[in-house]
Amino acid sequence: MSVMGRPREFDIDRALDQALHLFWRQGYEGTSIADLTEAIGITKPSLYAAFGNKEELFRKALDRYVDGPGGYFQAALAMPTAHEVVEHLLYEAADAVTDPENPPGCLAVQGALCCGDAAETIKQELMTRRAKGEEDLRLRFARAVAEDDLPRHADPADLARYICAIVQGMAVQAAGGASRDDLRKIAQITLKAWPPV
Amino acid sequence: MSVMGRPREFDIDRALDQALHLFWRQGYEGTSIADLTEAIGITKPSLYAAFGNKEELFRKALDRYVDGPGGYFQAALAMPTAHEVVEHLLYEAADAVTDPENPPGCLAVQGALCCGDAAETIKQELMTRRAKGEEDLRLRFARAVAEDDLPRHADPADLARYICAIVQGMAVQAAGGASRDDLRKIAQITLKAWPPV
DNA sequence: CCCCATTTATACCGAACGTTACGAATGTGT
DNA sequence: ACACATTCGTAACGTTCGGTATAAATGGGG
Image (cartoon, rainbow over all chains, first blue to last red; front, side, top):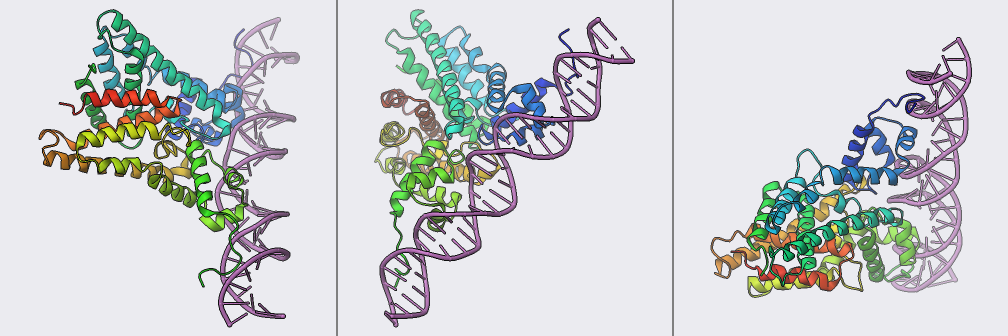
């Protein structure tokens, strides 16, 4: 019943992975429909039939990113103490943005950090996602304060912004060619001063 | 002698400022020649006659950025102690990337963090500039170690990378809508832990 | 076996891209 | 007054952009 008509000849998940890699490496504006169809190995009408349009395809690739290579962020929040949360966040970020299997950097940062009018909604989407991650971290730090795991006077919002800035800074460093060990040293230096008094 | 033929009817420095603002706000790929000519108020042949092509125009705008709104970086290196260098770097960066007179963020980061093939050379140029800044900071820290201004065991390269990552992280935060006070708190937290033991 | 829903490939759409020929306009040097 | 060097606006170049109309190919359900 659910399967009628000519069956699709390509794997839709593999196609999404290809799209994710292209958007990740070249950004939203820097990736053309021709780039995508060539990498996936399908024609343009097949791509449009399967994913809607370029913007919808990017959003689906972004979902895949958040649940896959970017999943370390939410995973780190589940650590039992604030110190472990930060430790995992920083070291996993260092590894994630320098994974040799993936493009360097972070899709949520370099997918559309700034752009022309045509990509404005994509930029907004990425801003929202980054803000969401920062807010989740803020809530985790607020919980830590309530649990006497962080000092009572600590400001969860300030700490979350501080840590997110460092993770985003590592993403820019990776995009600029920094190595995994380079970024791990940033994590190490940051951790040595955690929590800020 | 040097002035022959029909005189130019627009101010070439004002034009460069307009171009800088556009590239800064929309990135290299996100800014079209039509955007530029419209903002400057000249025709396309005038733009090409004055600046060569899009890539050359971007490079000239980038030079203007480094000597103008981005000049705080080199200025900070002249401070007498490593602590003051870092203090000025962080607080001036917080102000620079949230200057209400300018687009949020840093041109050297968001001008072309990642891109398609056509902008590859621009991306490389920005990577080189960022690496140059990090190297200058490394040399400044090396001097501080030699002057017993930083601990003998401190690694100037690691510290420079760490500070640059935070500055770049602040730029991403600004591009995402963070306020000046938000970023000053990042600077404050970072400084509280300086120098890392 | 044939209807039907769906995917396929070809070929094309109008718009925007970066870039440039070209001739008219303008002001200096002679 | 006239030649010359330069900039001006118009109009166009070929290419690529995101997106689609169309019809043939495919395989399950009756």
